[in-house]
Length: 128
Image 1 (cartoon, one colour):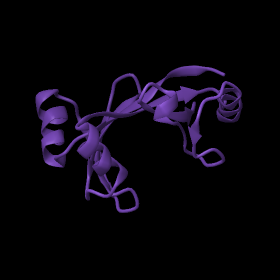
Image 2 (image 1 turned 90 degrees about the vertical axis):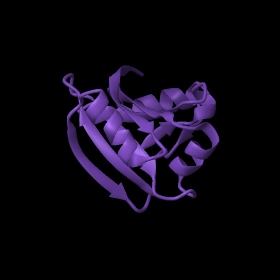
Image 3 (image 1 turned 60 degrees about the horizontal axis):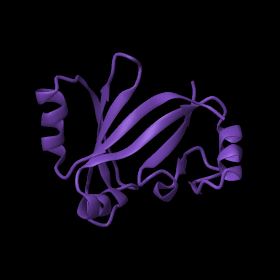
Image 4 (image 1 turned 135 degrees about the vertical axis):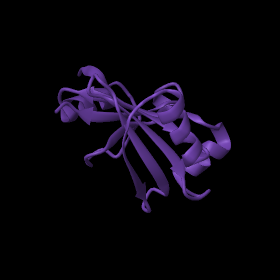
């Protein structure tokens, strides 16, 4: 099992437009694109970084979404860190053997449950 690096970081914000202003206007990052996911109940903004990673800013479109609930209970901040892994299947097997609680095993998006990662949601992303 090997984490080879940070792939991207997801930051949750209450207000999408204010999040854009912070990361684009105040911090000077270039907005690559925006999207909206009805399924997840979020608006997204993607800011590419020079090292190949990116920052994803997400805001809830409703209070019932996972991000909406997280904003209500924990406020704004880091929502997810996506870690690159060399081999997703081998990493999942090793983490399970180590007693780590996982979400989405068997799907293309596997996460380490916050209860197993000091309160942080960790996404496992196969290295490209």
